[in-house]
Image (cartoon, rainbow, N blue to C red; front, side, top):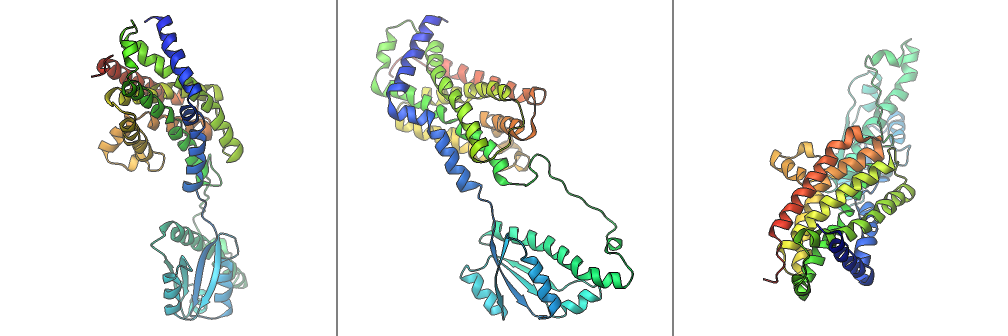
Length: 377
């Protein structure tokens, strides 16, 4: 491989990136825009879920119970309904996402330490909001019952703790507040950082479509030199995003960064090599820019959305899908970004994923070099 010929192709492609406004925006600004768009559309924090109440008991204890349920800001008390028909209408009109039904005899069974007649109905058309309300009503109910019973038990000379032989204490590591953005955004970084792959696929297709390969056909530039020369500028531009996007995520979304930035930068180079090699393969087999754009989304971005473990755990997928996911650079980079951002993982933990990226990048490059021909046909 000639360094001089490689630099000539690299300089040519770099000049195109700097001169073509659309390509420049695509590789430098679109990843950040896409991160913002997906972060706000996917990682919405659920809160203020409207809940209706139907109280058949209508006692002071039942009223104190459901007032305790709505003590925080996560659930909104919408209305005290008079009948089940009214609850049904509230659901039909979308006014509430959950309903708490307190059965008759609530106070009597509470005082006799029997099971409480409670029912929670959730809106199945929005299971996220309904599940959120169900979880919060569950633990708030336990707190409310404990508060109501404490006075009665003390009068009997008993302590509330004696009724709970299991002392369960839950602690969340790496994301104590359990904010969805803390988990999702490092994964999204691995997705948006793959946008240069689309650009390099379009660049090769553009050469074919516009006939500029005719000029290269008369030169001694080898296939590998041409392909590498086209990849290097996009790696360089992608590295700018390796700095910009994590810093923006830390500042704007308050995402923790626990690991080593030099390690993150190094492993990002390996990811860019792998994902751009994948884009080169698309460009080699596709003849037009429109087809290259469609193929890039179909082969690179759609699988990155569903098969890389960003939104759906790999462990819950069928084995054949897990194998497909392991063939995607984004799968390994998502593990790297989450590991470095959230857990502070080092090279001793992440080196297998770096090796996977090198192997995938080398394999894609070999396939592209094998099938690439410097001709228009």
